[in-house]
Length: 399
Image 1 (cartoon, rainbow, N blue to C red):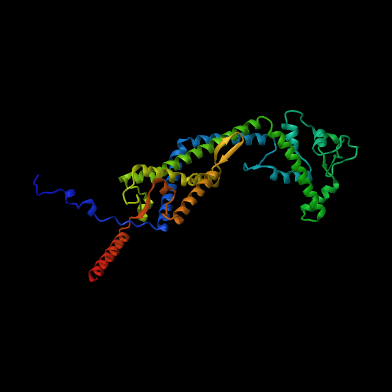
Image 2 (cartoon, rainbow, N blue to C red):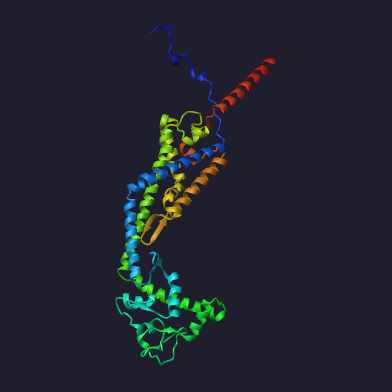
């Protein structure tokens, strides 16, 4: 090679003659906006990964199908017990809906069709109950509160034996004349004390009897086993959703907080690129790989509050109550994770704003500082410094 020809590196001035880099700390507001941009991008990618990738991969559809099957089996048991009614459109009637129907059936006079009474409670005790089924006489005494002997003093405030029957104990009891009169006034819109008391009294009577029957039914097979199966299926769906949300968040965070900064070894996330700020060492040198890993690790912990938000698009607000840990009857949901993440993020933000070096938690962990990469700001500062240097030289020459 010609001795007169020099390489590009040889043409550069020595390091001690190179101009020092202009290092200007990024403004707090700009840095916070950059963090918000990164959080938003992480959330969006996390939702996409959760919905299209990890939720199906972990078997969400099969688990929800098993959950639905268990629920349908339990509802079928409930309907078979007569403690849950069914309308013509297929809608199910539970305690709240059955109460006024039960009261009206006694007001209109009990009817029986194909062996089924209009009294759903009687159907449970007479038709569904496996052990110690009640006939009309037993039901009148045990549930309606009538005396075993029709001639004895009646302790029931609402019911009496049906005197139109040759054997009053062979049929279900009926409303007492006073109760039926007051109930008729109530249905006509009379809301005075006695009609209202009669209706509310029958409501309380039904609720107590219904809850007693339901408690007995719920502890029996096959309903007990079906509810256990449904509960287990529900928890399985919940843990699948939690696992998919956690995995989606970790992958999304690693993409934006580690992979992107590692590209070109710039150490800058997309949010920081957009807002023109860059993490560097104190002397302005680029971050080392270990520093990028440290920043990404702490950011992953800081923004863990995003996890419950990922399944919200599918599950709604119940995504916040998905199970995280289950130990016997103790279940810990994602809410503590949400709260812990928000607390850590708030602490990191307060450090950024009020600490002297304006370093957040991930800045501390990586021993880095965030400087502006906006050339307009840097050039303006360089021109300002050069102008100050010329003024100082001129002043020194005059003196």
